[in-house]
Length: 172
Image (cartoon, rainbow, N blue to C red):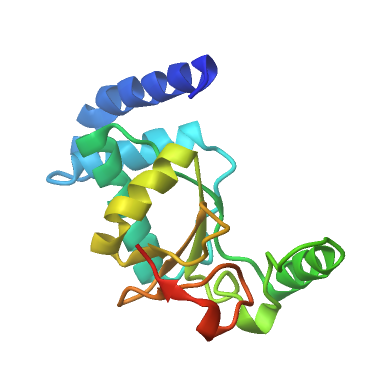
């Protein structure tokens, strides 16, 4: 973690503690959760949680609140729901790159369904990989440390998007 990231993390944690009294007034019994969401919203202002399936939004908010308060880990969202047109543009761009696919077509993309999350920073993704299953959030591709999906059961992790099932192994 860089010095800048450490400062932003410490500032976010301090801000969440300062927001606790207001969060308690807003939502008694859930102040820590609310203060965490407010502070992380300020830390990651470009986040767009709109379009996530309701159960995914709940799971993500609960997981990152737990990561924040229990382990001091911040988790931000870089990409969640994508409309089919945006997913199609990303897919076409990916087709021009060498190597295995990194983007699925809209009909196959869990982002279009609102059940996929691309997270940051690396520490947040590590936390989700270790604890996300408690919230039904699982890493689904070996080559994407940042990509998690909401699933009711642990999925078989594949090497990359578009990999055949026989190329997969059980996620760890």
